[in-house]
Length: 403
Figure 1: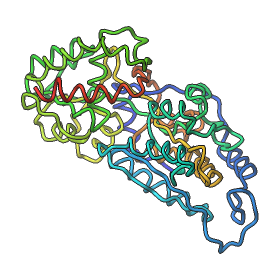
Figure 2 (figure 1 turned 180 degrees about the vertical axis):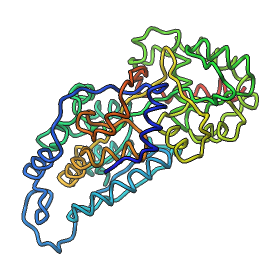
Figure 3 (figure 1 turned 90 degrees about the horizontal axis):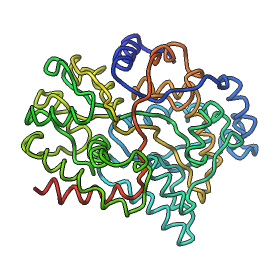
Figure 4 (figure 1 turned 90 degrees about the vertical axis):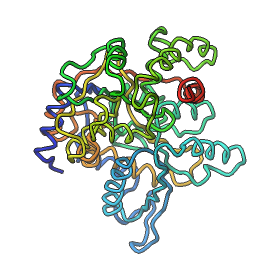
C-alpha cells in the first residue's frame, strides 16, 4: 500500500516537531516469510478452515464477534481492515460490534467475566479491543488467552518487550499519545511543562478546554496527569486504593482551574468535543490524541495552524490492545485475523487512516513510513492504575464538574 505524499509530509512535519511516540527496534521478519509461516502454522490456505482441516470452497465461513470501542476513526479503521481481510480469507467472517466512545465499554469486560462465572464461555465475545488497564483487570480473573508466534506468526514483528509488558496476553496493534494541541497563530510559545500549562490556563481564561474524563481519553489524561503531578513517579503504576488519600492536592488544583477553563467550567463530551472547539476558534489549546489531530488536520477539519507538543512530565500514551477471551470457541479464526492485522499491509492502514504509530517494529514497514517517523523520540508515559480510574471519574464529577 503506497502512502500519499501529503500524509507523509504531514506526519514527518508534525511528528518530528512535536509528537512523541513509541520508539522501535530494528529486528523483524519480512512479510513474505511471516505470511508463509502463518499459513503453515494456522492452516490458512484458501481451501482450509482456520483449524487446518480441509473444507469445501463453498462452505459457510467461520464467524466470530469482535467488540471494540473508540471514536469514529477507530470504526473507520476496522471498516477498512476487515473487508480486506475477508477478501483474502473467505473462510472467516468478522462480525463488528462497535461501542461508541463515551457510551461505556465496561459492560463488555463485565459480560466476559459474567459468562465465565456462569459457565457460558466468553459470552459470544471472541475478540476485544481496549487499553492497558483492561488487560490488567482481566489478567487477575484469568480472562485472556496467552498469545505467541506459535499461534500468530506475525507477532515476530512486534518488539518483544512490548509483548512482555502485558505477559503476552494482548496484541499491541497500534499506539498513540495524548499531546497538547494548540492554534499556533494565537499561541506563539506553548507551555512545555505542566506548571507552565496551568499558568497559561489561568492567564488566558476561557481559552483552554478538556473533555469530561469519563467520555474520552484526552480529558481523562489531563485529569489523571494533574492528580498524579505531585506524587512519586512510581504511583502511576499503582492500583492499590490506599493511594486515593494522596489525590487531594490534585483535585484541589482541578477545582481551582474550573473558573479559568472554557465557559467557566464547561466540559465537552468526548475527545471530539474539544477538537470542535479548537477547530472553530472558541479555544486555543486542548489536550488531544495525536492520531485524531493528525487525521483532522489532513482532512481540513482542523486548521493547518494546529500544532502539537508534549509536556514534561508527559501526558499518557502507549499501545491499544487486542485481546482474545480464553473461553472463546473461535480462537483459530481469531488468530488468523490477528495475523493479518499485524502484517505490514494492515499496519500501513493504521498509519495512513489513523495516523497512529504501527504496532509492529518500524523495520518491517514500507520505507516511506519508516522515513516519516525518523527522529521521533519518546515522551509520553504509560499509566496503569487499574480500576482507580473509575474512582477518579466519580470524584471529578462531584469535586470539580459539580462546583
